Amino acid sequence: HLITGDRISNVLRPLSAADGHHSVLATSRNWRANRIEHDAHMINQPTLIIWGEEDTVIGIHNGYSLHDSILNSRFVILKNCGHVPAEEKSELVSELVTEFCRDKRGRIETKNSEEMSVV
Image 1 (tube, rainbow, N blue to C red):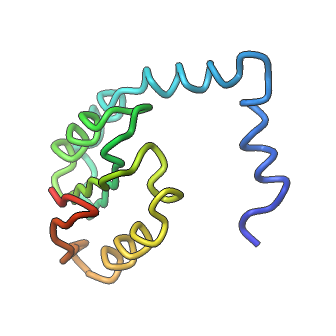
Image 2: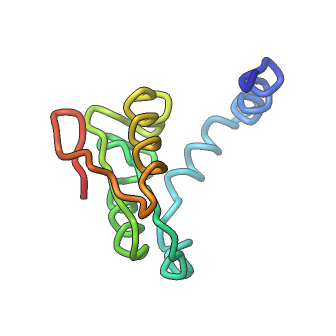
């Protein structure tokens, strides 16, 4: 089993400390794509970037910046989705990742829809 009680406890531990929740949020909100953009241009493998349109923790402009920095990237914006697309839209994310991995060049044939925008 991938998800165990111990793993859940390890993820939640920082949040249960005094002011832990505020620290995690502050750190996340101060995250900027430019911290990794410096080296992102060196990524030459197909890259799938999935972002929640309503992510209030790390703004979507960071996703656009990463997409612009990584030459061979695909950027999918999930509508009605926040910071954790893999949990909020698990089936859709699974389909996108599967499709992306099946194509040898990392393309996805999925088009814009009510659920997502493909950049």
